[in-house]
Length: 288
Image (tube, rainbow, N blue to C red; front, side, top):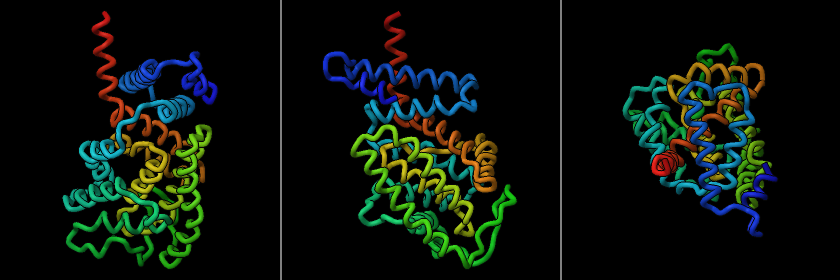
């Protein structure tokens, strides 16, 4: 991939023009979209989505992240709520405000793992009893659809504090990757973000809202390297739960990492590239 980067980005007259690079990337994601529509995309091969993500990140002319987050809110907030069988409109509004907060995130003010409490507080800020939000649970609980034991409530604070260094390192790492265009470190960074999320789910710090809060934190860390937020559709719930169970019960992150690679590709297509793909299709028709 780094060799491809050198070829495509060369400015010595041997490289390609920005227009050619853009059309090349659009063609790659157009193929991804068609294969997904035909039911051929969710294979066990992780190299393909990893290559697409890296190519997008390295060369693509990206839509402004503010616009991407606004589009995400309009199109996909409902998926996040349906995934958790949430029917309370006030919680839906709260989740929308979570993504407003992420879109305006300033890591000078919220630069530690306890941002998970802030996210949870905003999530429940519109319900009848908003004091429910932003507090660790005070009783033991279990994870639905899993036989994994969660952290005893009196140990939650201690286990979260042990993640302080990991979260801080991820923020610094993401900033370094973005500023210094460290292509080879992007996928390892994504993997580390997903592992952190799985460990948080294993702790299960809240009585309710763990999934939405942790997925929001994942999207925040993706945003640090200019990747779009991901969403999970209801029809993908079974696959997602199975992959998460492998991660938190067996410490096997392969399935959930692969799942997130494909979800990142979905978001790139639907939040950043749909207009470009449409334009590309129109140009093909014109040429014919």
